[in-house]
Image (cartoon, rainbow, N blue to C red; front, top):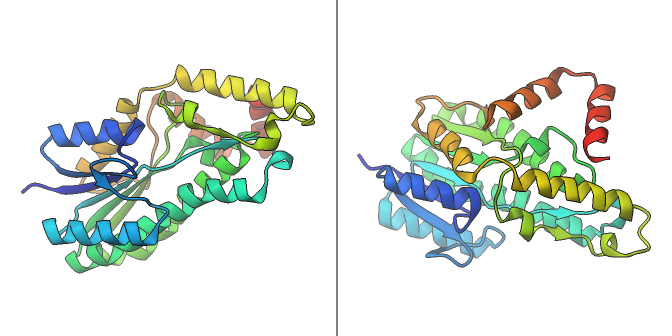
Length: 258
């Protein structure tokens, strides 16, 4: 029986790579984005609700929801306005929560479902000058952990996928806080060094297809993992950061990005 999947953020990067894999594997895929063939803006209640109604009307059921839409903003905390902080949290956290909430009644009625959220290693590893991005990913990861407990009696599974550096258009699309671009910023030299390191790491990172393969493996599993980390290197990093002393962790990250 053909399974139905909704992917948000499917116009580029990991979402687009996953769409291609699932389509070729025979899944019925709704590739949602603000400007794509299946329009849906995760930051707009009406847009999400209309998309949910359309999927239910056409397909009756939804087997898998993949939340891949996201964005990034960089800058020192002191250089960020609260509006810029809200911009980051609105999509990465609230937009993902809004999408999940819209489809939970569908999953409960049918008595099963899989929810996969693209989080980030940055949700475990604090990245200076991307503090709000790290916070948004930490928030959505712990949200998914708690959600998994709530949904267990309804046979609905939840998985957070935590990629590390990935070569996508995310790098070029990342916003820089306005005050971080000012020559008078007290953090200018350190910020530029740090963001340069991030961009080089991303552009030499894993492919979006590698992350998509991790998602596909979870989709095919009878029982999904709570957390899935693509790439052996990042599995080791995530494992180490769960157990290393806090002072040592901060020293390591400081060497890399501080």
